[in-house]
Length: 187
Image 1 (cartoon, rainbow, N blue to C red):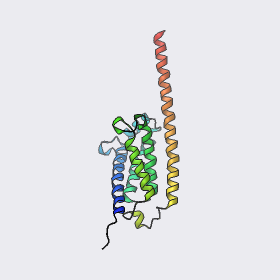
Image 2: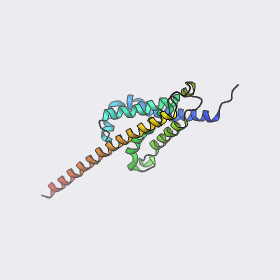
Image 3: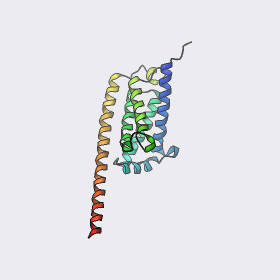
Image 4: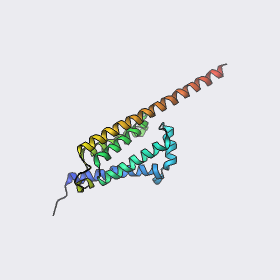
């Protein structure tokens, strides 16, 4: 009889918890489950937050969360799953950053924690109780992790930079409109 390996059991528990949270959040975005807005509601919210086009951004965020979560739970392609989660959470962090660190003030604490868990699991691997282990680690190789994290970082940087530009232009337009209204009221 074999003994359960505590480290591998811990990795499984962490994968299940983090992956479960991500699947729940992703299905809120994609299908409206668990009180979520579904794709249409999420698309409007994404557009409002500066992620344009909103529908594609909502689809990407929902698939990143739900898909990354499913892969983490299964322990399949774990380096890629961790990279997907980290990249997806980078977008969420960009939205919450103005609120500071703590979630109680609207900060980025929660998505940063989920992203850090994705990074840690992507680096450590899924452990023995995983599809990666059963399949001989064909999708759990160092090069897969390096490629996935590089692609995720580049994609996240592009998305966040584009969002910041959209938000900056909106703020400039609002300031111009306010100045115009104030100027019109003075004449």
